Image (cartoon, rainbow over all chains, first blue to last red):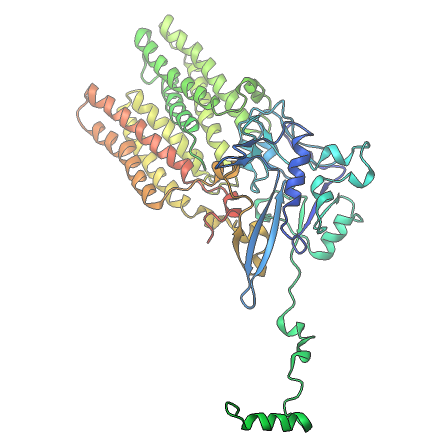
Length: 252
Length: 292
């Protein structure tokens, strides 16, 4: 059913820390690895070793340069995947009921056996979170690793989305936003977690933590005193040597 | 947006086909027998031909029946239902005209309303998308409906109505173009809101997530040069409106009437191509498209 639930029991989602992300794309690779051999159709590649390779990915990392009015530019790595919006426009446009948002945990999923591959859900998503698989001709999107997070065959430490498990910088956090005491709720509150394109009215569940303010040059002067000349006016033996050398040809 | 031929052929042909059905349903021209048969064949070829063209753009057309289930939320589902209902009702109405020589006016009226409804629901598929500010406006369904009834009037040989409707459609077309050109800038969505980094400073794409193309770039990042767009707009405007209007003003002649119809359809094709090709999807912002 493509009408949205009025509320969901849980609001599972991610917190992505733009301050910590180092832009290594490990989450992109682990996402593709897990999701190509688990839930639903594989994530195909076209011409993978040829001149123009292209493929389906559920998570991609952009990089942006931010230039403040004063001071140095900052480089921000920006991972982007489905935000599992509360008011998901991709769900309501679906003509077949293939797209849906789960009442129990708020995950937005595609029932691939109902998908006619019309592409309208991807048109409705402002974030580019959905990609039509060129091989299977069905819409693929982040499942929040629904086949990991409840999977009792996995060790407990692995019951998080593949991107979160793999991130070497700890820039991705998984949890329940409906619980104000959860790790993700606390992080969002403490660090001022923000929505992407709030004006689109999608109410994303996933939050992004803005980069922390950078140290300014006058604040990092701890080592500077050690770089000052040790003796500006040489005395004693060094003073005699300085004078003697200055009288030699080429000295001054 | 990628101007997919299937969708452009669909919306142009179906629009004019359903437009002709609207006029036939209202009894203009009041034809019966063989001439009614010819009119209905033309209308159905255009309307159904367009629908078949649109089905070719589906990844899994064999599951298309499922698309009739979600009318409560989906404009695409409503469009499918409206189109099938219009074609069935108009077939019953046409049967009366062709085989019984009698005009069942009430059925014709319902068929005309459903035909208009089909074009309206088609337009709403685009209008509902906040992600494409150029489309997300009431002028989109207004323009689709105006093209539908003016093209239909031209095809139905309703010269005097066609004249005024073409003038109205031409005015709407200019309005849509002028408003559309600033729609993205006025929508408030830009790279700063897309990344949430706007209050740190000016945001500029540094490195793309992938070096090759992908679905998003193929589907949403299509861009045409401003110069080509202006030339195409002039061609579309002359073919769709100026030439047919001039022909209407001349004394009636069957050959020229055919030229007017063909010219109009070619103009609508050009206009519809621009409708897609010039539409800016906000996901392009992430890739640095149209950044200001």
